[in-house]
Amino acid sequence: MSISQLARSICESPTLKLNETAALLREKGEPVIHLGGGEPKSRAPIDAIVNCTAVLNTGEVRYAPADGIPALKKAIIRYTDENYNRVVGVKNVVASNGAKQAIMIALYAILEPKDEVLYPAPYWVSYPEMVKLAGGVPIPITPEDGSFHPSVQEIAAAVGPYTKAIILNSPNNPSGAMYSEEFIAEMVRFCEKKNLYLIMDDTYNRLIFDGRSPTNCCQYAQSDLNSSKLIVVNCVSKMYAMTGFRVGWAVGNEEVIGAMTNIQSQQTSGPSVPAQWAAVGALNGVQSSVQSLRMTLENNRNILMDRLKAFDGVKVTKPDGTFYTFPDFSAYMKDSQKLSNFLLEKVRVVTVPGKDFGMEGHLRVSFCGTVKDITEGIERIKWALDPNSPNELYLGDRKLVRDWQ
Image (cartoon, rainbow, N blue to C red; front, side, top):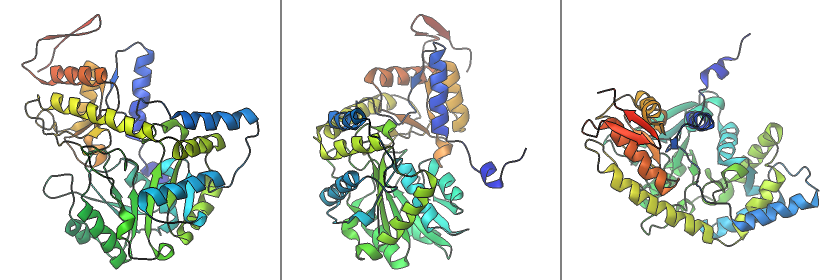
């Protein structure tokens, strides 16, 4: 039996693998704390549930247009107008099975073999694999100053004759860093000048802290909508805590969106119709759930930061948004995969290795769970790593004894 060279080149999603590992351990009764996840604990908005239930109760759940039902596209158009101050039409919108598929079909639509796609590190784990699936070459750009904030000059220096697109994700998964308004403005103008596609992954755009306002990339675009190479991607997964509904979308020029729709029509067709109606309910309904989630996450972030700062040798940057931190644990162990495995084995805490996000020595630590999970999880990590901690730790009735240095 043989599989294709492409299939052999694609890695398994490390975050999904960790979710599976944590679930299996819990089924065995292990006291696992998952600090590696990207799934808010909030319930989906009631408006989403009511809309979804209503369509299910009719029993008439049928095929729908490949680019999304009209009601959802109308809701996305209104959302784009209200949040980006950009008037778009139905041909500028495609609804997909999550933001991940929206980015994937965008890459399929624009890339030729060997075209390069640039993105700053740290980056979402799926970017390089998605670029490879679309036949492109992934090019990460690591800021020279060791921060999570790239400069336009660093990105510009990496642009070559094969560069086709740049992906920006702000606030950023895994670091929580929010790129500055000036940086986004310069990047939009730079891509227009160089005739490059700019894919703005705005998945966490409304989950930002400390009184900041979301960055509107569209206000810096000089090109007419249907000649613009700016593609804005969003979803209901994070801001409405609707991860399992799998509804995202992209907004762009008609030609690109048309190509994306054609690809999706042959790939999966549109998202599940009940899920689309749930998304309509979320987008058109009362928006207090977004604010409530944002406030909960900001409080969780503050608690996590206080705990992490108690570590000697751990370098941590305060996240501006999302629900992730990306502390540097290299003072304890430089190999992030080994460190993540060590913490799971010894104290049953799930984290995500930094190497999967393009920065070795770091771990992605999530704060979208409960305060109890955050405090107890960090307590376990500190016990496992700090040689000055007591020799014993109790996980419920189970006593752990440190048998390592």
